Structure formats: C-alpha cells, structure tokens
Image (cartoon, rainbow, N blue to C red; front, top):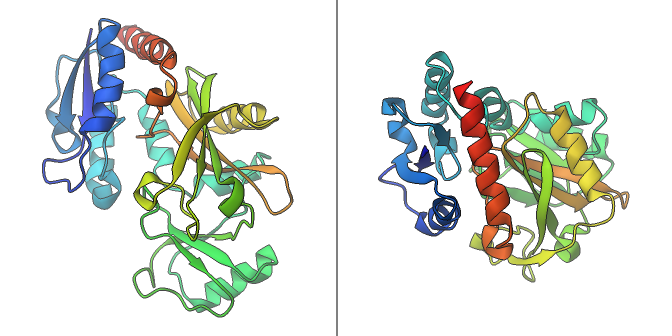
Amino acid sequence: MHVAFLVPAPDYHTDWRWAYDVQADALGTAGIDVAPVPWTEGGELTGVDLILPLVAWGYHQHYEQWQQLLDHFEHARMPVANPVPLLRWNGDKSYLEELAAKGVNSVPSMTVTELDEAHLDEARAQFGCDTLVVKPLISASAYGTFRLGPGDPVPERVRGWRMLVQPWLEAIVDSGEWSLIFFDGAFSHAVAKVPVTGEFRVQPEYGGIIQRCDPPEGSVALAEAALAAAPAASTYARVDIVVGNSGRLKIIELELIEPALFLDHAPEADTRFADAVRSAALRARQ
C-alpha cells in the first residue's frame, strides 16, 4: 500500500520534518509505504492508494492554489483522506457559525467581510463583552490572531481583511485548550495545551505547554457532536475545546486538514492511526 503524504512547498520557511517523521514512522511500522510530496505538486500524483494532506503546511497562504488542487482531486476522483468536501469546508473558519446553528456548543463567532472598528463595536454589543479576539477566516497556527481590549483599534496588519471575531475567553490563560484526537470517528487520546505566562496562544511557536491528559468530562460527547455535524466522515480529526465564559465547554476549532495528532504523546495511538489510514485506502478502492 502506497500513501502520498502532502508536505509544505519546497520554499516553506519552517522545519516540517519532525511532524512528518512521527506520522510516517507510525505508518511505516504498520507496513504502509509512505512518501512525502510537496502539496504544490499534488496535481501530478498518480498510482497511489491514498493521499494524506497531514503536513500540507502553508496552504492557507496560497489558498486559491489549494482550492484548485482540491478541485483537481475531486474531478480526477483521487483517493484523499480526509474527503475533499470535508477539506474544503474546514478550510474556512466560518464553519464555527454553522456548527452553532446546528446546536453544537461552540465559541460565539461573527464573520466580517472587511474588518473595521464598526465591526468591533458590533461584536462587543453582540457578545456582551469589551475584549475580543480576531483571527483570519483562512489561517493556521494563530497567524494574524490578535486580542483587542476596550477601545483598541483594528491592527493595521489585518484591517480590511475577512475575519472571524470572537469574545475573549477569560479561562484561556489558565486552562488553555484541550485537543481530542479521533480516528475513524472514534476517540483516541487527548492533550492539554496551556499558554505560558503573558501569552494567550497555545501553539508551540508561542511557547505553549503540551501534555497528555484525560479528556474533560463531557468533552468527548461534544467533540462527537461537532464531527457528526461536519459534511462528511473523517479518517482523522482533532477537536479543540475550551471553557467558555459561561463555564461550559465549547468547540473553538475543528482541525480536519493538517492537524498535529500528538502521536508522540500517545505511542499506543500509532496502531489506531495506521488502521484508519489503511481502512481509508481500502474504501477508496471500492
């Protein structure tokens, strides 16, 4: 079985090998042949059993090209996991509003087409809070994410951008986020991600501390509800959950394109990951 692993373009600025190696090693141990392919060259792929975009970092910076690649995969009926409709849906964070409309407990979110101060005022009124977080609708690794206090102007870097606006979550600096990993819709393992003092972003680039943990009570059911509301079933998924200002657990993100799966924190999950990939490849042959 041959799997093409989509990785960053050759000119990508950040080391990606560590992420690829952990996941490729898990598949290789299970007897699955894996080869890295820059996602920008994905349109040239032939003769593979499955395409995994798990390290397609940087796609959000060339989003039109990424959409064209997904169109090619769909029209050519290429075997992709996760499915193309799911990848397309998950690429734009406006899906959070869709989840909320379907009754999934999610962080309140407002999509704006061109961010300005009037939109901030509207969001403060809608959410009933003075402090907001703004982030691009198409982004990764907290790219373009800002915390804005009372009276703060729109950062010039993102002024006029299409953005997602959310209330500031008071608990984020203490409890951080929980990431729940699923393979073929079944819960596998969880990690806690906590920001360092003075920071609210939990990504490793900002010093975030990541540790294996048990999922908070009720979080697995919440994650399952979010995945059930997505447009297709997933081979792999990461569901990020936080404590909202009401004290209830809320979905802050679904990661269905190129999530960190934290296999290095849960070695026993290697087999579950490999089984899910093998099953996806076998389904694609049918």
